[in-house]
Image 1 (tube, helix red, strand yellow):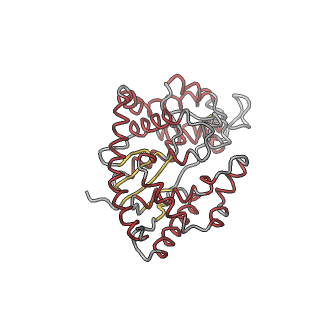
Image 2: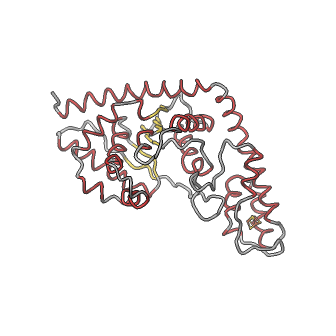
Image 3: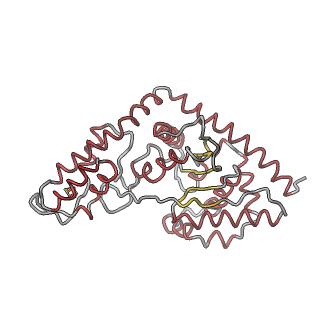
Length: 328
Ligand code: SF4
C-alpha cells in the first residue's frame, strides 16, 4: 500500500515508559505506521537542555526503545533512531538559527514555562530548543507532525522558520510541515489529580510485573467523596473508572457505572478488576519485551540501522541546503 506521506515525531529518552506515555504517544505511533512512512526519533540532544546528569541517558534510551518495539513499532518499516546519531541535525539547527529572531524564541510560552521551572539553568540550548525541533522535522522532509493541540505553537514556529529559510535563500528545499492534530488524552496519575509522570512518582510502568502493577493500582485515588464502602460513588469523577473505560470490557464498565452509584461495588473490588484487566492487556507487550530484551544487542542493532537510514535522508537534504545557502 502506498503511504500518505512522512510523519516525524521525537520523544526525550525518559527510560521505561508508563501508561501515560503509552496512551498519549506510543499507541498513536503504532497506529500511524499503517498509513504513513514514520520517522521516530529518541531526542537525546534535546534532553541535554534540562538534565542535570547524563549518567542514565544510555540506559534510558535503551529502555525506551525496547518499550517502543515491544508495543508494536515495526523497525523494518519505520525509521527508529537516536537523534545524536545523525550529526547533520546540529548543522541544520545552526543554519536555521541564523534566520530565527531571538525575540520569537523568548516569547514562546513553553520557553517561559521552562524558565519558571528552572530559573538557574537558562542555557543557550534551551532558548534554541524549537530551532532544533524544526531541524529534526525539516531534515527528514516530514510533511506531518502528530502533536496535541498544546504543541500547536511549536509547529507554527517550525513552519515560519522553514518559510524564513526558504525565503532568505530563495529556495524550496525545506518543506513546511503540517500539524497532524492528535487527540492526546490527559492520563492522570495514581493521585487522580496530576498528569501521570515519572518525576511525580504517580505512574504505572508498562514493563512492571503484574504484582507491581496491581500494587500501584491499589494505591489509586478514587472518588474523594466516597469515604465508606456504603457511600454511593460517582464514577464520573473517578480516575479508576476512566481507566476502566480504556482497558475493561464494555459490560464490566457498564456494570461498574451502575453499581458504583448505588454502592453495589466497593473501590477495592473495582480496583482489583481494573488491575486484572490491565495486566491482561499488557500480557503480549510484556512477553514481547522479555523476548526482545533477552538480546539487548538487537535493540541497538535496530537503532543503528535506523540511524543509517536517517543519515541517508539527512545527507541528501544537507547537500541541497548547503547549495541553497551557497556555502563555498
Ligand atoms: S467503585 Fe470504582 S468507579 Fe466507583 S469510586 Fe470506587 S473505584 Fe471509582
